[in-house]
Length: 138
Image 1 (cartoon, rainbow, N blue to C red):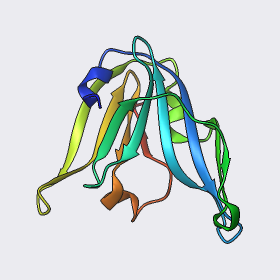
Image 2 (tube, one colour):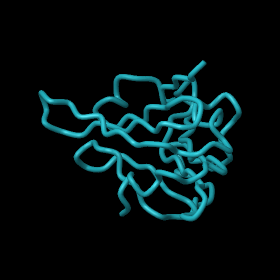
Image 3 (spheres, helix red, strand yellow):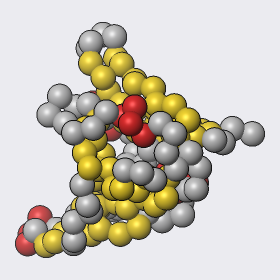
């Protein structure tokens, strides 16, 4: 595991997603997100057992089939994915989102040169769309 603070000062070079596809779902659901950052390589974002965001240095895996449960597809994030709008920018700061009622970290906010993006953990992620929230500075 690595600390989110290790992302600060590094440039976002690429974003890779693993998406679970199933015939019963209208759209795929996000399983993992990898940020490829200068000086670190591939950093996997994953929801930890306590619903926080867990970061690890890890290479993206390949696609795999789960029989009747669907399949997982791994590919570069599409241009419309919120994090994609920050490619080439430096991560200037990381803020931890804490739910004071639960006394738990529930996500991260990554601040870039020209905006910021929220990365929700499990508790927040269950109540939001699969995409991270995005806020671009003017």
